[in-house]
Length: 420
Ligand code: NAD
Image (cartoon, rainbow, N blue to C red; front, top):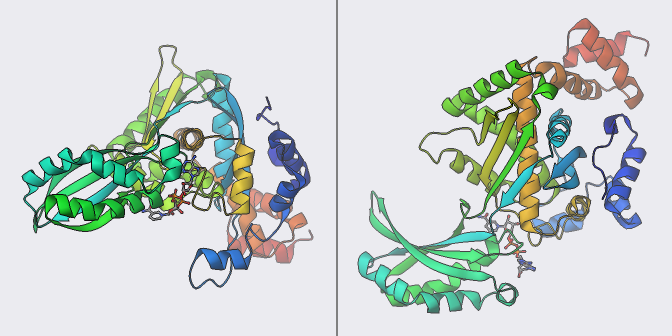
């Protein structure tokens, strides 16, 4: 099995990095070419087929985080992100976690929830009738996906709930659908629309909305890791990290920023693999508030030896088929780099990356602060924005750090006044 703990990956040239990734993931020369192309992976024609009113494409940096071991398997994790430090932080977190075996992660089967809003009906009677006809409803729903039916997946249950609104009580029927290795939005919507005439007939009511819920609470994924106390700075650092976590768990202003750090990892991998990041964020934020107060998505404790234990749990609706995962050439190559074979495995990788990210952020915040590491990387962006050539960037960054002034004006001044 390939080893993802690659020493000093960040110091290597692009060619060296690409050749490591190629060997790790057994990429073909065509796949390597896709990674090397500078058009961001899709042609205008493809973009024009994806959205309306297209006028171009928009590229972001793609990198890989190293050192990930998840459920005993090594991964190089592709991440698409514009923010400096994120990939370095994920790799650092993974490096520390792997000392004690890496991440352990589990993911539920891919159950999607479809909702049908039913109005103008006798709610209690309608619930009874829907329950009596549940088999018929499920059969009709499953007639809409041969693929899922053949895999013994598809719609499995119908349930009902009443909700109170200022405009009166409403009945909501929910279809629970095993969507296999897809995110499943389209098949869920299709099934909801398909069964609604039957539901109207059964309930003698009127259906209004027929749509999946992005609050995918039947697709929960959980990752955990032990971070060796000596590697992270000893008992005091562990205790401070736990105190920092308590701050996040009990103060919404801190919790939002804490969870944003987790999302740095989750969304970067989601973008690289062509996931619907809006769905992921919306579900994660709702889950963070499930107790009635918005809290930390992760928990930080210590074991009896004083080692730090991190756990991250959230609903995660991701797919390895469907959406743009099979359309965007770079997303396809990123999937190949990950070497994953199921939606659950992808969910485990994404969640472990979020946890690694959270570890690095909370450790930095509890010790030297994040600006030291962050600003060096930020300084590189500023130097580039000031117009520095690639070979000038390191010197300008060094000078800004020496001068203890990291700003665009400073980068421009150094560029103008120094012989580089
Ligand atoms: P999709 O519409 O491409 O459907 C997946 C396809 O893969 C299906 O045709 C299915 O039959 C097939 N398939 C093949 N092998 C499979 C397997 N092993 N498991 C499951 N399916 C298999 O993709 P989708 O996942 O239904 O929809 C995702 C897209 O829908 C995303 O782009 C998302 O942005 C978009 N979307 C989202 C929302 C929302 O989140 N509210 C609403 C509408 C659309």
